[in-house]
Image 1 (cartoon, helix red, strand yellow):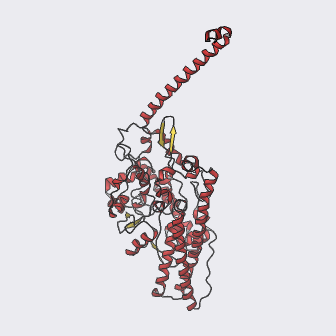
Image 2 (cartoon, one colour):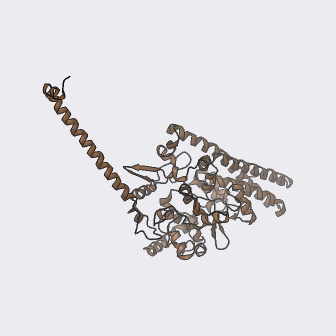
Image 3 (cartoon, helix red, strand yellow):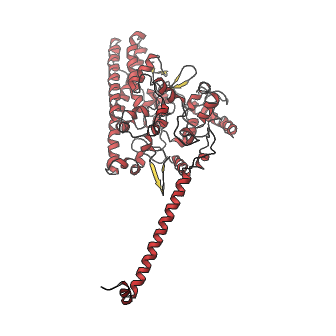
Amino acid sequence: MTSIKEAISNKPWLGWLLFLATVAVVFLLGMLASSVVERRSEAKYAYRPPTDLQPFETDNSVWGKFYPREYQSWLMTADTSFRSKHAGSKPLDILTTDPELVVLWAGYSFSKDYKQARGHYYAIEDNRNTLRTGGPLTPDAGPQPATCWTCKSPDVPRMINKMGAESFYSSTWSALGPEITNTIGCGDCHNPEDMTLTITRPALREAFERQGRDISDAGHQEMRSLVCAQCHVEYYFRGEGKYLTLPWDEGMTADDMEKYYDSYEFADWTHAISKAPMLKAQHPDYELFKTGIHAQRGVACADCHMPFVAEGGVKYTSHHVQSPLNMISSTCSVCHRQSEEELMNNVYERQDKIAALRNYLEDILVVAHYEAKAAWDAGADDRTMEPVLRLIRQAQWRWDFCAASHGGSFHAPIEMASVLSNGIMKGLEARIDLASILTGMGIRDITVPDISSRAAAQKSIGLDMESLIREKEEFKKQILPLWDKASL
């Protein structure tokens, strides 16, 4: 057998080949060793406990000094370019695309202005700019309670700690405007001492306590949903002090919460057209999510809206909170093996069917409000109208419970379909009863005014939008500079 030495002597180029191969292997091993050392160093740096973060630190950029990857991903929530078939972060005026909502909310501030949420990055800006907030042109007064700030900023836990929850809620939106300046971020969900997930809003903790549960017993995976549930829930302002309360004492379904509200004879407002005592759903995202298959299988909100990201040797949670449809490869595809196109179509199929039910109930309610008005105008009395108004209240509560949710038609399509179907039956029952009342009064035809556009719908319910916009612009011109100066 020919030895390696003899082979090289017969073929000199083979020696050079072996030499170069050896050099390449040594080089690659060196690179590997260097990479391992570097990644270990990165991991040590990235997860180093932030020893000098102060309690109730509200400036997100300060947290970013210790957790740059998370902070940089959080900054990406400023991107509002994504638009899916039914939602997204792209700016959208809902009253323009669906002017019937103006009628459903007649007499309530949502009929003035209702836009699709752009995301956490814009929470303060959007809260300041909406026509639903504002008030007298003084920096320390306003018709909205400070409770309206509760879910908009990490400055809220700081102020609640300073003032106490009752004093915070009973203050005014305008009075606390100079204090609430940092938008939703790190301090809303994390303990600055060790970065563990924590509950910073009293309402969620108090709701658990009234149910006989201790929220501190929740494990890490459950907390990855509960920190979201601090805000993405149904709530109301209880009593004269406007104390923020989650209506979960009877349970977390639409029926349970309606029972809770009925026990207090609570109404958010009296409808300007039908005179029905109405309930306004906020955004019962967590409640609906809990009834869906993903929650039942142990998936957390953060698994889909804040997926893990690997960068070198570091695994961290992306804080670019957004629709999973904008990052299917990092969310849905982690568990599901179908193509991205198929997965997206699966979502749209569910959303389309729920939207059809929701729109049908919406149409029923618009006509029912005007039929109730016709009955009142013809001289119907309270005793005759009370059962009908109760049905209108019940039907619209179920519509709003679904319409106000973010992603509920995907999170829990079966529950959504059940709630909407129940609402449709109650809405139709109200219209049947109204038909009987109107026929008895000799009224056969009801005319619904032109509500084909936002402007037409707002005019039909008596809103002077030009004055509202003018007052808001004056408020922003005179008051916001005072707030910004005071916050420096």
